[in-house]
Amino acid sequence: MNFSWMAWTPATAAFFGVIFALIASMAVWERLKPGGSPRVGLLRIETTRGDRLFISLLGAAFIHLAWLGLTDFSLWIATGISVLYGIAVFRWV
Amino acid sequence: MDKPWNNKAWWLVAPMLALVAFSAVIPLMTVVNYSVQDTFGNNQFFWAGLEWYEQVLSSERFREALLRNLLFSAIILAIEVPLGVFIALNMPKKGPGVSVCLVLMALPLLIPWNVVGTIWQVFGRNDIGLLGWSLKSLGVDYNYVSDPLDAWGTVIAMDVWHWTSLVVLLCYAGLVSIPDAYYQAAKIDGASRWAVFRHIQLPKMKRVLMIAVLLRFMDSFMIYTEPFVVTGGGPGNSTTFLSIDLVKMATGQFDLGPAAAMSLVYFLIILLLSWVFYTVMTNHDAQR
Image 1 (cartoon, rainbow over the protein chains, first blue to last red):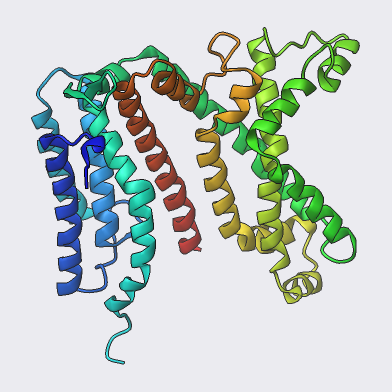
Image 2 (image 1 turned 30 degrees about the vertical axis):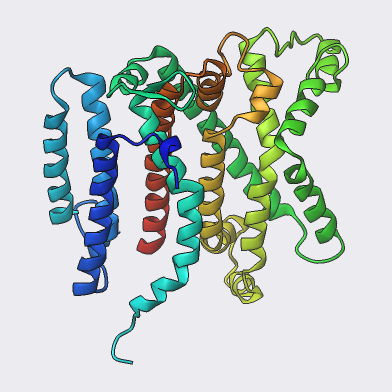
């Protein structure tokens, strides 16, 4: 099969690799500890692990966009902030 | 049974996941790939990095189209949801009138988007259109081709005409599912019409209303065909919504890279707003 029409690049392949690895690790986590660990956190809404991953990824996307639109600094800083944000979401949301 | 869930049941959603992968995930991945590259056709791509994202985020044109879209969605939700609830409350629940009302309500939904646009384009013309000609005869200076306010009024009226029925039908489905015992209990308690609406009908309609709000928000935020047929995005850029701008960029100018970056930012905004709507409404429901 020829996938050249999808115009893959190493960067986008790595990006999707990370996303799929995260989803796969969530599946493993669910296997080890079923039920999704629902809880009510900082946002006062009930969230499962999947919800927290979604909030982390969506937030990370907007952190990167805001960083790109508002500053001229390296995007790696935004990635670092996103990782910290993700940890905070999994810890307190 | 030892446990209340069975993870093997996830295999039942595998066919749907495969379908979504082919119809949504793979195209989305391709758009991400396009958004960091430039192309001149012939399936040849050149690395552009984050240039298109920077271009989109600093673009005045994108910001204006986004604001127009948000304003449009806010206006049509503010009109269609209360109007839809009001019509649903006043529709007959029994008798031959039910079928007549349901057919009348379903009719606008059956008309294709481009036909709705064409109907309103002719309807609003002040030389041959019933609406335009009537307003002109009444001395109203109405011209959707040259006046941005008239163009907005026409596009909003068209959307309300086309889609309020969806809200009506969803709310009606919620209303007819309420058992008579609730109304009888309210009658015994001497509840007012408002109290019945506030404490029986509205809570029972909450779930369908949530679906109606979500569907109408997403649909209005992605609106393309109707305003494109009626106004073509004009006069000037006054009715150029994000989707119209996106199509102009992708197929008109063949700027696939910037169009891909713009569509991803557009997608993320829709995702965020839909999640906020969904979370706020379901959370409010759960708290009750």
